[in-house]
Length: 373
Image (cartoon, rainbow, N blue to C red; front, side, top):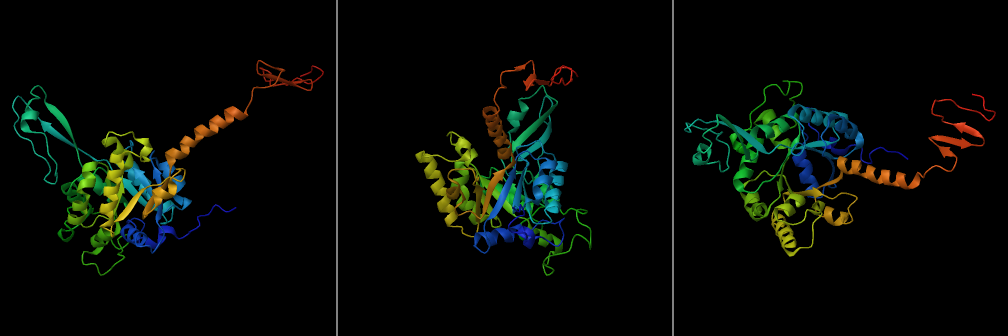
């Protein structure tokens, strides 16, 4: 039986002229969302290692999710994983990166708070000077402000990936995310143009030669931006987000974080029957139904008992995960414990006697039936 992918072209139909550029993932999601192509089938890499990315890349998944948020993966490892997925799949698989969602700033403090400055693109409430000034005995303090780091988004996009942005709750956050992801003021973008990621005339060939912004306009149109809604506040603001922030390509309802944030049992992200949970999911579905041009995405692991229900209506479905595959090894171990029985009588001290022949003696000798070695 052949193990070759059933759709050999895969997302190669949406690859850019160079594999150093991101796929035209935005168009792929639009086509899947409108029914022109089947939903994209994805694989989640929770362990985020180069060897794993290299091994799974040729398997034929439409997309592979590199989890940069919940792993120790650094920028160089993430970049190498993206390139492995692009090149080892021969362009048949789109890499998506969920990136690190934190800022870190240094504030120099003395007995008096002299000054503190933050990048102007940060749209979040920051600690007050009075709070910072309470640390009067410190010379240096690192402030970790939850947010959506401008530079981290650029790292993932520069590598050639599309991006998954976690914990989006407000219009301001969504605007910041889109601004970080796009070039040029026409796209309300503040993304910095990387000068040497692409080689002029070699890897910067445009898919759309008529785009007035050239390669940077092509990159704007290629890489997809998917946001994750993972709190009730995010759901309640979702209609405003999708109305006021055009350019979001897909929305992923993060069921595990949503349940935990609602003080409900996580249930592995598989949902539940609590009235408040059902109300939250219904509100999300109702809002997405008013924005049919934005794709829905989410987990629907093939092993789930409600797999078809979870996959229904989604243009992108993650059906498998490296961590789930490794967890199946525990079932193999249990089966082994049940099948492999204790040795029969005649076994003593690791020596098995069979038909008058003793094998496996402790000194490595094999003794035949007449006692000769």
